[in-house]
Each structure stands twice: as C-alpha cells, then as structure tokens.
Amino acid sequence: MRFSVNVPNFGDFADPHVVAQVAAAAESAGWDGFFVWDHVVWHKDSGHPFGDPWMLLTAAALATSRIRLGALITPIARRRPEQLARQVATLDAASHGRAIFAAGLGAPLEDEFGSFGDTTDPIVLAERLDEGLDLLARYWTGTPVNHRGRHFQVDDVTLLPGTVQRPRPPVWIAGRWPNRRPLERAARWDGVVPLFASATHGVPPAPDDVRGVVTRIAESRPEAAGPFEVVVGGQTTPVTAADVIGPLADAGATWWDERQHIQSPDLYALAPVLRRVEQGPPVF
Image (cartoon, rainbow, N blue to C red; front, side):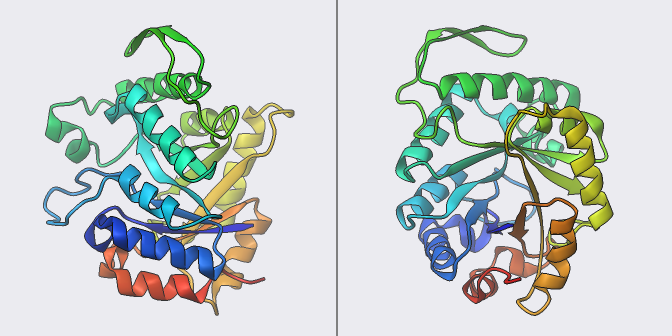
C-alpha cells in the first residue's frame, strides 16, 4: 500500500509556492505521492483563485526528489492532446521520471465545458478521452505520429523529447462505480481511480465496493498486462487510519489518497492540510 496527499488547485493551493511547501512537507513526512486537482472553475460561484495544475506540479517537482506527482484527474476532452503531451513530458523531465497521468471525463460538465461553449454530451467527451489517450501514449514515445480520427488529426508530428519514463508514465483512469465502460477503459491502462456515489470526496468507500471494482477490472484485463493500481481515498487521522484503510487494502486497493472532505473549508486551506501532512502517512 502506498500513500498520497491530495489538494485542489484553488484556494490557498492556487499559489505554486504553497504547493511546493506542502509537497516538500509530504516528502519529508514519508508520503509516496502528491496530487492536485485539474479544474478551471469547478463551481463558477465559488469565488476562489485557481492555479494551473501543471505549473503547480512543476513547482512541486522542483521542491522534491522522491514522491510521485500528478493531477487527479485531467479531462483530456477539454485539452489539446499535443499541448497536454508536452506538459506531462515536461513534468516528467522536471521530476526525473516521477509523473503519473490520471485522466477522466471531467466534471462538473456544465461549468467546465458548457460555460465555454463546448459540448456537455458525455458520449462525445468519452470519445475524445479515448482518442486523446491513444494520441498521448504515441506522442510520449518521441516517434512520428500520424492520425486521422473522429476528433483529432495529426500530420507527421514528432514531439521531442519523449517522456523520461519508458514507454510512458503510468496512466490511471477515473470512473464512477458501477458503470461498466470507465472500468473497461481503465483495464487497458495502468490503474483506476474509482468514484463512488456512496462515498463523496473525503469519505472512504465501502470495502465491498472496492472489491467489486477489483473484480470487474480483473474480468477485463489481460493476465500478462502487468501491475495495476487501485486508488481510493478519504480523510483519516493517525489514530483511525489503520482501521479505515486496512479493510480497503484487503479488498485490493493499492494506494490510499488522503483527502479533505469536499464540503469542508479545510479542503482548500493550507493550515489543516499541512497539519495532516506533517503527521505522516498511515502506519500499519
């Protein structure tokens, strides 16, 4: 089991200096990963300042040397794959091969897509997600790419350098349990970040739900496909962490992502997050 810290890219964490401070504290305290959100507005009436996730993660990379870094999660459908490929490759270079890429459909759709005149049709967004994932994997190799797809076209482009990690950084896919298609998509890559209707951000999921995700992935994933990560999260204290996370590890989870509750002002405040980070990851 590995352990990460999760912060939004708004509020106090819109500041790259603050993010670098928290990432450095997380590494010093023994956490294994540090993740930020990838939102442009989240909720339009929130009034929060926002930071670009890749700028924030680069600041974190330059302040650390060991922990893994990434965004949970990036909606490929609202980005140009070629630009996104450069951002992730640059983060991988800045961190000397510590980037993790996590992708999903994105939400809230009306705020983050409709507000800018883009489609909110989840079918179209899922098509862009799948086509974009394929392009990213090809771009990261540093070899020529030609592509004619429904949503993207590429004419003999080579993006150099490729990623430090070969053939590419790990790719995790977010999806809502028990929906079938997101889990089938995740099974083709390196990990899953499941979302649960019964466990909002900051609330640990039920072990039976995690076990269901693991079973569904196993049904869709080739036996020789290699290691696969199951990323779940919630809010714990050092006293409660083992009791909360132990049953989830038994159910097949491989990463615990420490998250403040989504309805708490602590979600985007430095002091409570830093306090939990400095207490260190759970110890079994």
